[in-house]
Length: 70
Figure 1 (tube, rainbow, N blue to C red):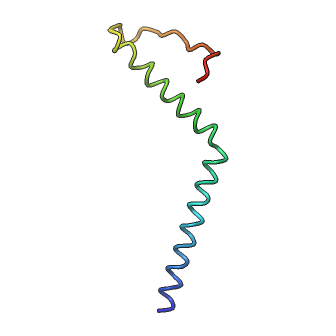
Figure 2: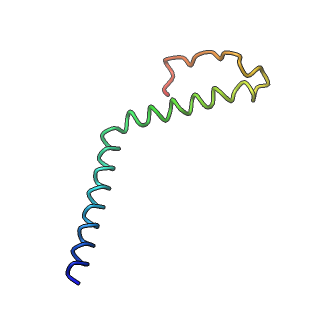
């Protein structure tokens, strides 16, 4: 019985350490994660725009101006 309780406590502690580590990683790297998500979303939207607007799919789109807040 003691072994089972010790094993459960060890597993619970390992889970807490893993969750704390994951939260810490996301907190420290949140700016780069947000930038990666924004870039991926912009690439998807730019890929869909020609088909939505009815133009040829390989038509180049103008670049997003650098002064925009996103």
